[in-house]
Amino acid sequence: MMRAWTLPMLLVVSGSLVATPLALGGSPGTAVALLLLFVLLAGLHSPLAFPRSIGAVEAQRRSAADGRPIIYWRAGCTYCLRLRIRLGRSARRAHWVDIWRDPAGAAAVREANDGNETVPTVVVAGRPHVNPDPAWVRAQLSPRTAAGA
Image 1: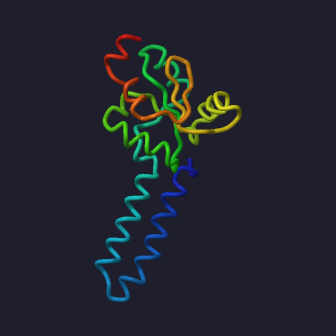
Image 2: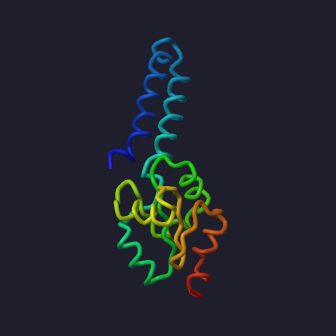
Image 3: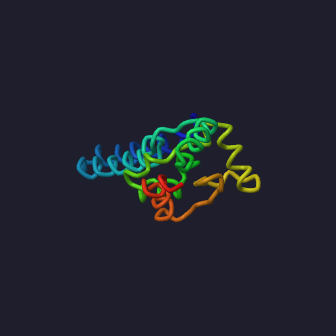
């Protein structure tokens, strides 16, 4: 779990180290702006930017019942963040599994990716798709697609 917060904490500490001399040197506006930028980047790279994760076993059970995709991800992954942002509100329709918090999720990703923990890995109808186009994932999340599956 601590791994997921390493990058965000480093960003906050770095922002503080950059902003402090500016604030003490007479540029408090610039210091605040830079600190806010670093905090924003930390938030985007933290687990807070993603829907609540569940375990891989629970995600597989729910996906089998409702046909929704499973998205395996990890904090700090630029491609995962890109997918999350591009999915917008529809992201909550998927089952999200943080592979750094769930060993079974990490094992499922390694099994699908020849031993590598490559994320995002999206599993739709039992088939894994590595770093798929966000538009394609959004189409898999549409209620029309889920009802037809």
